[in-house]
Picture 1 (cartoon, one colour):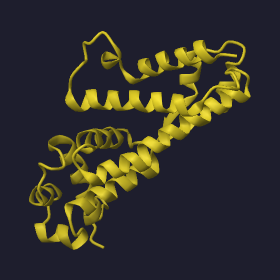
Picture 2 (cartoon, one colour):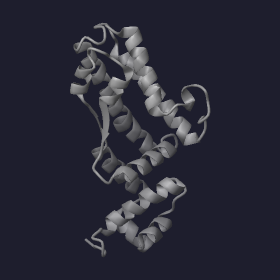
Picture 3 (cartoon, one colour):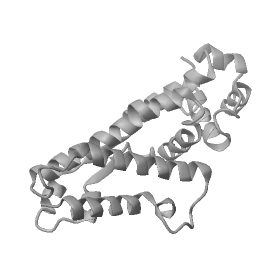
Picture 4 (spheres, helix red, strand yellow):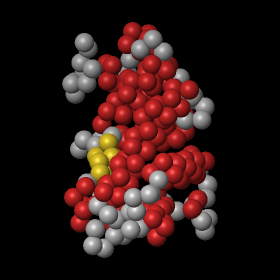
Length: 208
């Protein structure tokens, strides 16, 4: 495998260039020729490593799905039992990814938001990884809150998972379109603010 002076393989250089260009220009608008130029290689060399641009995107998404993970801290949930709050619930959820990957994560999130409605590869990824992973975290959180006696036993996790997903989609759509930043409703809130309102509503309507 070819290595350059900083130890990266040609394959990794292509992926790094793809992430940057997809985030800056969009997946559809980025050509393989531009990817090759950004990586400092010939266009034919790109095809030696990846049969198509879509395969490049699939590999990037696969890597992204492996290192992004929302962790639910049950100890923090237990700690708020005496004084349940939306802020306490929110603080129990942490997005974890390897050190130094922050910029990569943000760039990939932007690519996903741009492409999820026009690229079947990204749409499939969002459905199978991103949405399902978030739904599982919310479902587990609600079951834990029920077990701790913070929520009533009849609380339906499926209902709240659907509400959470719809808000997540609305937030993603706002950012993808670049609108709504000054709106006086949910479309103008940031994600933590949206979730605080959601969890506050959850506690008020289904608190034990």
